[in-house]
Length: 326
Image (cartoon, one colour):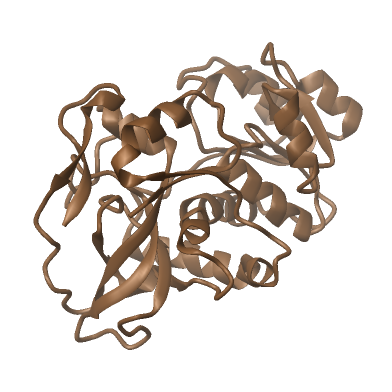
């Protein structure tokens, strides 16, 4: 099969399409899927640079955390799926290839009205966002949610699901045009963070602060996050594009009785990932099927143009998801 392949760590030029061995025929609860599209994530950029190694059992050279395709073959213990079913899922790696093998518990169906490229924009972004905002952050109706990098794939997913849940959503971005586009998706208030400050403006919008903060940036926003957090609020740390080390005043965290949670999907067990997938499907998949929530695909690149896709995502020009087609 053909796969995206990292020849060595470095810039986009280290990527190529290479012929690699097919996965073995599935056994037990495993399912073999022909990948038609795969989402591109910042984790893939980090893996390409050597900063985000694949978990044990997955290739360091073949990236990819989510895919959409059709089942080719199922293991002897599989009861929920059959060849020909259109499915999507998260995985710990190797999704950017023509074939991928996953446990059946990670799969969920692609609604009839969605293309494979639309579906490939869903698993990583929406499951990450749902797990962070609802499972970890315990967002409730009428709560205030602050989303950093709201125009990212995870940010847009969180925005749409939170609005369907009845929350007020405030988002930050470094560009005003992205905030304008997010308003079309339901964003209540946008804060342009050209200098990295947002706490004062947020307090003008929500005097009590944000009940949940979804932080895809990291260290550079940490101090302002604590200032912006409501009493008993949840700060959910998901991304580190703004650095990984920060100093902060512990007194603020104590006074606010803050819940500070770090979360990542990739390193979890299959059982934990399956639980996160089920929670998302039960809570929000009906809204995608009905069209109330829409996966936002910014650009689709053929897999052969993976270098260009990486360069584009790295430029921070994207709004929503970048997808590779196979």
